[in-house]
Length: 511
Image (cartoon, rainbow, N blue to C red; front, side, top):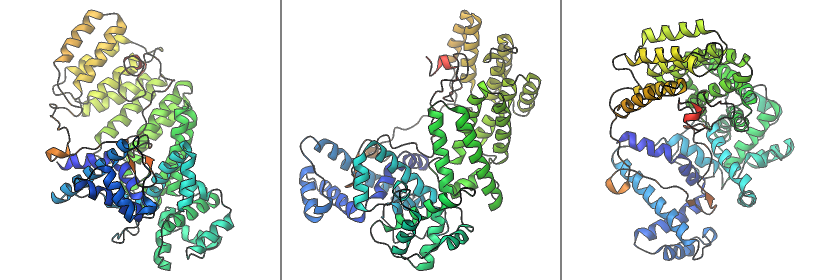
């Protein structure tokens, strides 16, 4: 049940972040509406009663908008029930991230005792959501400005002097020298803001606290680009995704290799051994642990046209393995497979064979190791393209007792047979595939429970709106646990699909 609750938290993180963005008055208005619904009132009655108490926060509605508003508050009521049940069962959410997000919206939790933890990227994550929404709805920018919310886009339009004047209005007297001294002891603008709050015993009204962070973040990126903050690293990650979406794999790869260099520098300076240690401080729009998988994919795509990126990919993957905890077997396996693939992509089959043989001797049940080795011969129509060798490798792996990911191995063998024109063999494998029941880590598939609040388990709906800001929650951007996996135009019909499925492009996104 705990795993189910954690999945619920993961799936609703952005929605909960939007909730945290509400001002205290907006939150109180929403609470009043939900309270009326719990009494059995119609949504229109609940809205009217809430408007009497909070006229400035009241939603404007008509008959056409009522269904959407009802859905919003039904979700909110359901969410409250879920969290109450979870609390009663002893489950707790990760307060640090949501509290940090709430601060950006001015909803400061007086009971929060978070100090010394880098909330910067959490601020930055929610700022990214806001700015994406602003790009799609210019009226939202006007609304945010009218509410006095601080957003990086607003701060970047201000001069240095205007930023310092804004800081002084918040009770912080800094100049370039004192700001530089303060920066040397922290990793993010939000770390810096935390120190200033304690030093000056600052008290904020409304949305003043987010402006403290905005001013510091903008001044840092202007004056110290050679020593990027966590916010700047987060922004560079997102810029890389934008370049990748434009099919600029080399540009994305170059940018991300620079980001990786900065991450390693921070880790070494802070004595961080593992990526998990960095992620604990980072809390960015993407987790670094997930992001490295996308870096590998873009370096692969860049290497199709420029083999020099294959060498970069090898070095990168080796560094990731060194920084990945042993229990994260999947990441380590993916990076090892990618290293072997890179040597094959460069035409060094001796080295590719050597690496796969070495790892499969240690772990012969590594199903995707057998697939990766086979792909070195079955996916690249170059001098070493040899479907017979690809078949041989897969059949050798399938003969291993307890091999993991057997169904994926059979799918790959079926594709090899199809490419060889051996349709009868492909059909035979397909029949065998239908009887295989395994999971990615080996063993039997375990039945999962459909989550529903009404059965004491959890569920959530999307596409709702919260608070007076009325921001849509669909298409809010990527979660920090799921990085983009869109197919790239670089992939050929017989090459591995860039979506990460492990299938040929023609059998996956290209079908």
